[in-house]
Image (cartoon, rainbow, N blue to C red; front, side):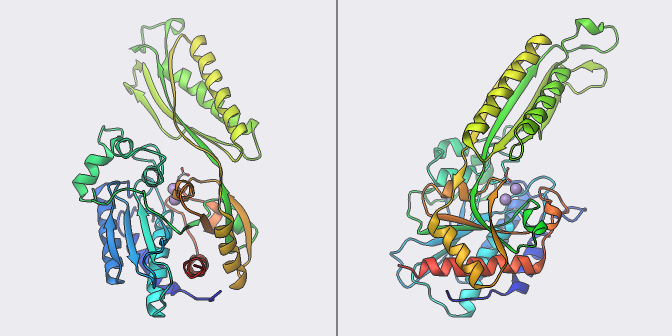
Length: 411
Ligand code: GLV
Ligand code: MN
Ligand code: MN
C-alpha cells in the first residue's frame, strides 16, 4: 500500500464547477442523458482529461474513455468511472463524483510523477440513470455484452427519440467498438444514496454487491367518457385501476421487508383532462431485493394483483417486464483492495450492499469489480438537496487511488 493522498480541494472544486452545468434553482442538477447540458458536461470532462495528459476515445454507445499510459501498455487497464447524466431533479454527486474522482486519480498520479505498471482509464458511461431512456446502465451493459449494440442505440425516450439519434446530434457517436476488450479491474466510487454510513459514522462503505432490480411498464386501458353524464357504475376508469395497482406495489414492498423496495415513479394519464374519465394509463414499477428468489416472487405477486384488479374493473391490462438486473456479488480481489486501502488510510468503514444500480453491475461480468461508497447527508439522493462533505468525498478518492494503484502494480 502506497498511502497516496489525493488533492481534496481540487476534486471538490471540479465537482462544484461541473455542477454549474444543468444547475437547478434548488441547488441540484438536471442533466438528462444526451441533452445539450449532458453534452456540455461531457465536453468539460474531455477537456479536463486532455489537459491532464490523457488520450480520450469515445465508443459507439458514447462511453468516454480517458487513458493514462502505464509502464506496460500491453496490460489491460485498471479502470474507474461512473456517469455524467442525472435524474430530472438530481443532485451534484450521483454519478459525476465517480467520474471526477477518476480524473482526480490521474491528476494526483501526475503530481507525483507516478508511473503505474498497467495503464489507468477513467470512463464516463452513457445513460446510467435510465431516467430519459430505459433501461438504466444500458451503455455499460452493451460494453459488457449484456445487450446488443443495436438494442442500446434503439432505446427511445418518451418522445420517441433514440439513443443513437441523440448521440449523433450531440457529437458523441464515437468510432470505437463498445466492449470486447480486456479490463484488468474496475472500481466505481459513489455516494451511498442511503442512510447507513452516516448513521454509523463510517467514512467508507466497502461495497460487497448490488441488489437485484426489476422494471415494469404497465398500461391500463379503459374507456374515455364524459365526467358528468356517465353514471358511476358504467365507467371503465383506467386511473382508478392504476391507483389500486399502485397500492398493491406499496403493499408488496412492505410485505417483503426488511430488504424489499417497490416504487411507482412515473405515470402518464390520458387524455389528462379534468372532465374526461381517463381512458389510458401508462406507469412504471421498480422492484428491488438482494435475493433473486424473493424478487421473483414479488414480481409474480404484482402481476397477479394487477390482473385481478383489471378483471374486477373490466379494464384491459398490458404488463411487461422491460429489465432485470440480477443481484451481484463483487470480486474478492477488488473488494479486498478497497478494504485494505480503507484500513491502511485509517478510515472507519463497513461492508455494505448497494440499494442503487450502478454501471459496476454490468462491468462486473467482464472484469473484477468493486465499489467505494461515501456517506451522503440524511441518506438523501435522487433529490436536488443531495449533499456530501468535502472530507468524505476526498476520503473516497483516497481509497480509490490506492486500490487502483495496488491493482495496476500487482502484475
Ligand atoms: C440508478 O440510479 C438506480 O439505482 O435506479
Ligand atoms: Mn449513480
Ligand atoms: Mn442515480
